[in-house]
Image 1 (cartoon, rainbow, N blue to C red):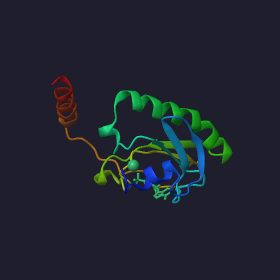
Image 2 (cartoon, rainbow, N blue to C red):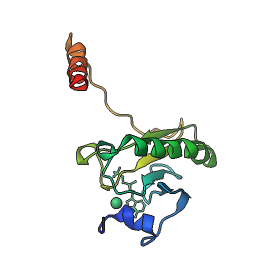
Image 3 (cartoon, rainbow, N blue to C red):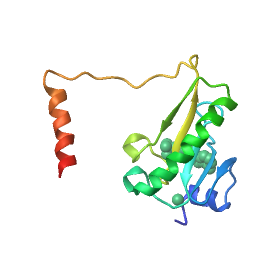
Length: 137
Ligand code: AMP
Ligand code: ZN
């Protein structure tokens, strides 16, 4: 992808603070960290997001996430980490080259959690059924 910012970073055409690379994946610091050390793990292959990824690539990407989660949290004395992928614009995805966020988190960082809804009577079962039905087809 010629106009993809992460493809350019992977090829070295744009600068990045790279912390890890192997033949399939690259990891570098985001320029807009939620907390210091916030790292992005990206596949070298241009795929848009998880909707677009084959199982083999998912496995490779998450093995790298697992490899990095201790170094990233320990390097910043974090108490935990969020590991997340935004999939499509509606979820907050801005860069359309798949990337896993590893965000160091602190008990004290007071970042707001997502709001929680509740289910009406019977609605949870109906929602579960919708997903099971799609899985079965
Ligand atoms: P998302 O909203 O999931 O698409 O996240 C995009 C991430 O890419 C954000 O953390 C941005 O700060 C980060 N980002 C955008 N441009 C660059 C860049 N040139 N180098 C490093 N990170 C970047
Ligand atoms: Zn790309």
